[in-house]
Image (cartoon, rainbow, N blue to C red; front, side, top):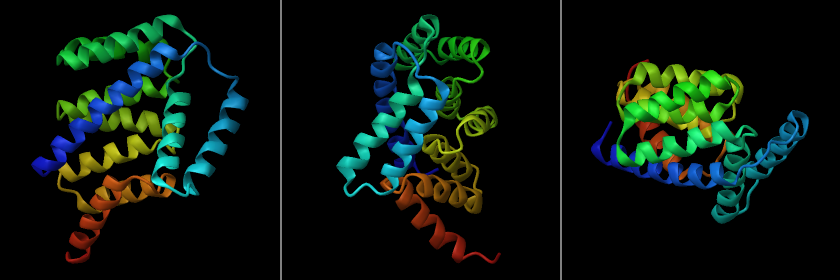
Length: 195
């Protein structure tokens, strides 16, 4: 992975953590599953047709808010402490708490996703991929997980797989400018390689 991409990825990770921190603090209860599914379907439909980057950003934030909600106050507390641990660079503590989050609720996709981000920061790609697979099994439209998969495949030198992951993320959320640029660069590289 190019150095600039790693720095950019870490900045995005920091932003993601700030979003998670605010959402975990504010999440009090989860809607019923059927209502949640309908809400997400509507949001993703609006995201694909958003007329501006600003509108897309608001919709994307709202989707992340829906994903981050959890009715269990203990899980919200664990997630909040996890974010603090990551900010301090205490990845061991973060992973211990996230292990507990996913043990308590294996259907809480943001527990798996945040753990994948920690493993990605540690360059433990095998564990990160395993957690991303869990996220995508729960929510195939998780554009953050798809972008993370693209970064991992890029770091591992698998350009075709990285391109596929970025293109899948863009199919769900066409407003991911960094993913669009990475996909463009990879497309140029892949087209120049004998298949």
